[in-house]
Image (tube, rainbow, N blue to C red; front, side):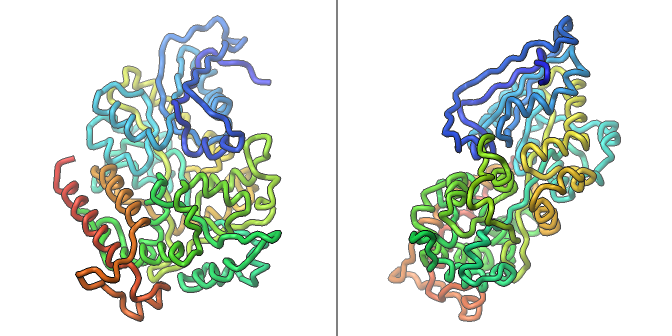
Length: 485
C-alpha cells in the first residue's frame, strides 16, 4: 500500500475525458465536479508545499485519480515543496476551455494539447518555447516519433513549443470467429477497398445465436471523431485536406470525393446499420464489445479495454476479447496509411512558476514515465527509446500497433487548423446525412466506370450532393486560411 500524498490535488470537470469515458462507462458511473486531496506522506509530513502548479490533462486511463497519483509520485517525493493540482478535462469541451484560457491569459501552468491543436494555440502567442537545455537532456528531436514530433512546432518553424506525450494509430478491429465462419481470410479482406467491400457483404449475412450481426460499425454526424474516422480513407484515395503548400483547402478534390462516397456507401448498402449513425465512437466500441459488429476502426484504447479485467472497467472476459485481431486499413490507390496523432504537453506563458513547470515536463517526458503511462493507458509512447520496452512488447497486439506507426500520418500543422477542423468536421457530418438527388436540375457528376469499379460504388451514387457540401466547406476553409490567425 502506497502512502498518501499531501502535495497533489486532482479535479474532474463536469464531463470526463474521451478515453476515460470509454473505460468507466462500463460501470455506468456519473461524475460531477470532483476534487481529491491527499494526506501527506508519513516520511515528509513535516514538509508543507510552498509552490503550486496547475495542470490540465485529458485522462486516458481507467482510474485517473489513482493512476495520475502513481505517475507523479516519484516527482512529488523529490519535490515536497511543490503542490500539483491536476484537472481532468473532457475532449469534447477541452478545446473551448483551453481557447478561453489562452485568450484570457489565465490558463494553467502546464496544459495537454491534442496534437492537432498545438498550432492554433501557438498562434495566440501563449506558449513558452522549450528551453534548449531541456531538449538536450531529453535527447533532442531524434528521441521522438517523427509523426508526433511534427506537431511540436509550426510548419517551417524549428522552435519547439509542445513536447509529444503519447500517440495512437488507428486500425481495424475484427472478429476472428466471424471471419472464419464466413470463410474470409483477413489478409484478403483488408487487401484493398474492393476486397474489403466484398468481405463486408459476406459478413452481413451471418447470424450469431440466431441473431443477425452487422458487418461494419462506424458512427455518424454526432461523433467528435468523425473527421479522424474518415482521414485514412481520404489519404488512401490520394486526397487531402489542404494543398501541398498548405495555403488552400483540397477537401473538395475528386480524390476526397471518391473516398467519402466510398465510405458512405457502406451505410447506403446497409452494411452499417442506420442506428449506428446516431451513435458516437464510444457507443460503437461498446456495441463491438457486445458482439454487434464484425469490424470497427479505432485506436489502441480499444485494445486496452479488451485486455483489462471487468473489475477494472474492461472487457477481458467478453467473447469479443477472446475472438478478435487487428489489421491495417484496406489499401486505396495511395496505400493504407492511418491517422497517427496524440497529445502534447506545453507550458503557458502565463505560468508564474515556469522553472517547476519545465521540471515536471522533463519528468513526464522521461523514458520510464512514458513506458508506465503507456501500460496504464494503452497509448503508444512518444519516445522512440520507449517503444520497444519489454514490458510493452508483452501486451497482446502491441507489436501490430508498432507496425502501424510506419504507415502513420498526421494532419497539417498550421495555425488555423483548429478552426479548419471544425469546418471539416461539420461538413463531414452533413455528408453523412446527405441524400442522392437524381432529379436535381443540375447534372449529376457521375464517376467514371473505371473509378466507380475501383472504389466500389455505382456511377450514379450521391457524389453530386456530397460535392456541393464539400465545395462549401472548401470555400469556408479558404477564407480561414486567408485571414490572420
